[in-house]
Amino acid sequence: MLHKCTTTFHNDSSLKKNRVLFFKFNRTKFNIQILIIFLLTWIIIFPSPQAMGNTATISNSPSTNKTQTAQTTPKISLETIINRLDTLYRSDTAYAEMEMTIQTPHWKRTLTMKTWSKGLDKTFIVIESPPREKGISTLRKGNEMWNFFPKINKTMKIPPSMMMGSWMGSDFTNDDLVKESTRMANYYAKLIQGENRDNYYIEFVPHKETVSLWGKIVSEIDKKSLLPVSEIFYDEKNQKIRELYFKKVTTFGNKTIPAVMELIPTTKKNHKTIIHYTSAKFDEPIDKKTFTLRNLKKKRR
Image (cartoon, rainbow, N blue to C red; front, top):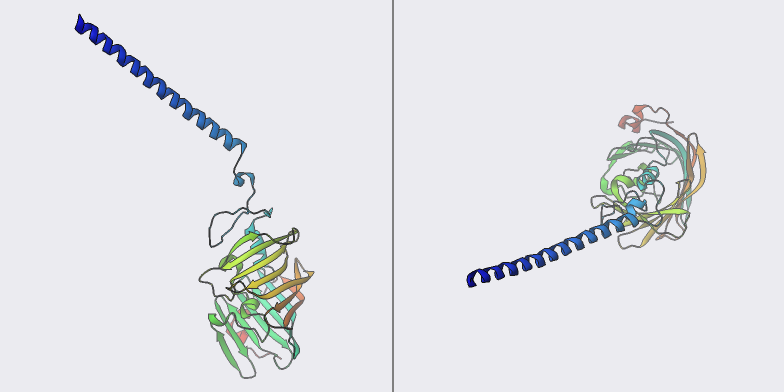
């Protein structure tokens, strides 16, 4: 009898322990369920910034390739703005006549020239006046560029290392004129804060493999027209090197562009170069022979 009683007592004790463990387990399970419900409620009430659309559509800065938030988020994608900047003076085809005025403390001269382009990788430029430079021409195809000097009947190929060199003694570089590099392909980009709330500010930093004089470029874009207002160029030490201003918005055919670009080097006192588009045509047929070395060397009256 004693053995049976002892056994019964032992079973009752085990049952109580099991009940306690069962209660603790259910209480833990209940707490986890409450936590899950709370988290789901939080997510529903407070959605992420991405879900609310409070982000710049793209940002490919060197620090991250993820989308970055910005208070000045455009209604259109950052990619669209950059593409518009890259193709501002170009199209499927483009032809333009322009004047370039180079001003220094000691002299001032004006070149008139014609330029043809196809897409983003073909450009041909020929100088019309003054007589001293008449006939000098420039051809760019893909990553290659040549200059032709008719007075000495010589063609010179421009190496990549000289793309950032001065074009015809102006403050513009070879790359500026023929657009060998593009912001979309050769630079990281992100939206930044600026002084004017009516404009977008985009910071461009060159890829490591991009040949560039600039540590960064800051472009100011009008929000309504998406036309550039200014661009500030900095070296790798974050020192301002030059300022480019876009003026005199003009419509040529099916395209509206700033007809005047004024470039001021901050490291050269009283120097500046002005390009003035006097006429332009876009998306009209251009003879494919235009972008050939034979045409580059052609004698012109």
